[in-house]
Image 1 (cartoon, rainbow over the protein chains, first blue to last red):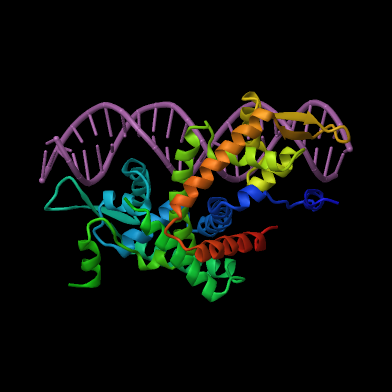
Image 2 (image 1 turned 90 degrees about the vertical axis):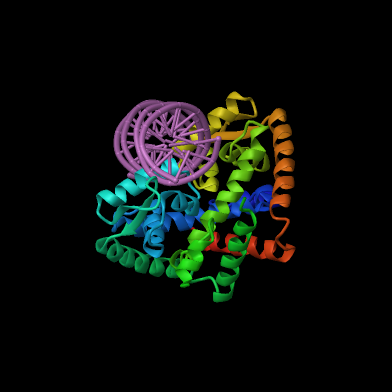
Length: 156
Length: 156
DNA sequence: TATTGTTATACTCTATAACTATA
DNA sequence: TATAGTTATAGAGTATAACAATA
């Protein structure tokens, strides 16, 4: 029996030697798992990954402008508008005016927004902790540092 | 000057202590970079990430069925149909019939498909090698293994 | 009954251009 | 001229239900 046949004889799993060499392939597959878990976790708070990320960033960074928030989230300003609209309509954040620059908004979380954020973060912490329970503390730290350093090294 | 003010005084970059603790956040940001580079690389071959991945898997695994391919790509069978349609219309692959199971297709690459695949893989190897040039060989291996182990540990 | 491939559909995310109001 | 936010729009990815043919 050849290697290929042996691989195919395992019903569910087989590998591609070619794809296995690409970091991007492994990143995507791993991220799929995390993303699915995160989406499930956020359902009870009526949040999606993007609305959750935006809310956390606004809570953590008072008076953030939409442009800076979009940059922090790696999305286009245009696409952020509906996200901020949604959070504002739910009264989780407010668009304050900046006295010194009347073009920009200063985004701030409401009390209700901070409360929801706190609960959602706690839930995500718990879920992620469970999701990565098989990974050693050392491997986790290394993973975060490697990904973070890589991403920062690529910024324009 | 507080820490918050210090962070905000750096025009482009600031951190969220909350999000920085989540592996998923770092995965997404890192994957964004890889995905953008990959898309750019594949443009000249008229491939996208999904059509590229499907083509490589079909080349590497002759007689693959659509169901197995979808599972390997972590997407729904339904969403794979248009991807396979596209590759078939471009005559990069063929849908052969399986004599022993007339429900299923056996996907196989054409000569033209194998040629394009080879060129695309070479280009992606070159681009990814450049993209991760700042990362040590050791860190790369560890990253791949960590992501791969994690993903495998989560399979249902 | 279960599985393979398919269609239809709806939702989310992403990317771009063009506009307004301010700077 | 440039920037902040906005609108409109099109493309791409994802998720689900339902169906025909076959097992």
